[in-house]
Amino acid sequence: MAATEVRWALIAALALLPAVAAAENSGATRLGVYQDDDHTLVVTPVVAVSAAPSEGARVDARYLADMVTSSSVDLVSAATEEFSERRDDLSLSAGYTTQKKFSFGAGYDWSHERDYVSHTVSGNVGQELFDRNLQLSLGWATSFNTVGRSGDPTFSEQMTNHSLTVSGAQVLGKGSILRLTYQGQRAEGFQASVYRYVEVGGFAASYRQPEVVPDVRWRHAAAVALNQHLGGPLFGQADYRLYRDTWGVLGNTFNVRLILNLLPGLDLHLRERVHLQGAADFYAERYDAPQTYMTSDKELGGLWSSTTGLKLDYLWRAAAGGGWGVSGVGVDVKADYLTIRYDAFARLDGLSAWIGEVGTRVLF
Image 1 (cartoon, rainbow, N blue to C red):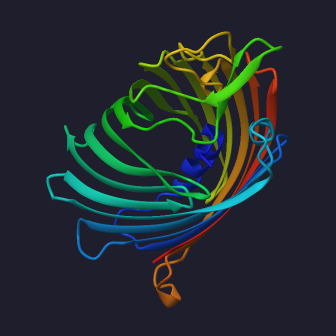
Image 2 (image 1 turned 135 degrees about the vertical axis):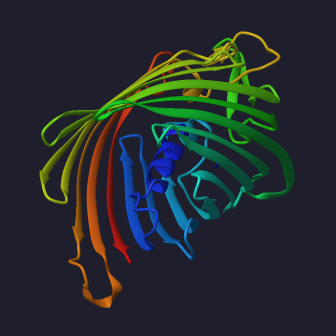
């Protein structure tokens, strides 16, 4: 079963394990749980390790198991029973930073579920300039995806996705950093859901047929972010992201975060994220007559979402000469409340979800 945007957003969030100092080795775990009122449950454990084998070098590995159980309205409308599935994801990466602060790296990611297999290769370069007041970076990735259909071993389609990310971060003053980012993507190949059907014709004489979407999709996103020390133990982060693609989807995302240092090593994070999205040019919940492209995917319709979150993050640092080679131990607990409202999807006008995460890390 193809994953929803909400599910992939959770996976992406879980992949961002807490960062550690560049010269340290670390091991980390994370467990995330997503539960919404559309009868979908996602449980995602993550294990990651990071090592610095030599000065300037870094190697990272991460394993993620994504387990989903759902009987959502999409499944019910498709006359599909409740399903459970598991996705396994393994990623490896390595990088090196020279004494002149030029960095480069490469990575590989393998993802597998019963009806989808993906291989992704990536690379990046970066340079710090002007006494480290300016940081420039360039990243690219290509994924090769095989789309299958559960219960049908003869069905196999291909989709390839290329992405390019350019970003720059500039120190504006004491406690103030501005970052600009552009990301472009081109997806080519089979991009429909093999399980989704659309209604065609009037209510008295309608029929269903598989959704059809374009084989090519260009995505463009530009973002601006500001990190600001607000005085004392309080820090603020704010960013805005503009998204546009060749299917006609236009998105605006606003994100604000406050970080308060409560005690040495203990931080409280508060955040609010609002996302506004217009519908794809060819989206409709029902079509009067067949069209070249047709989809009733609610994630391609108009929608807005709000995410309110709270996180506690604690990192204990060992005194110099601490035993067992451990230099620090950390734990964090996070809770988000997500609300989504759909503009033109009568079968489900919206949903609410709780997302909980707990993570641990050990530094060496």
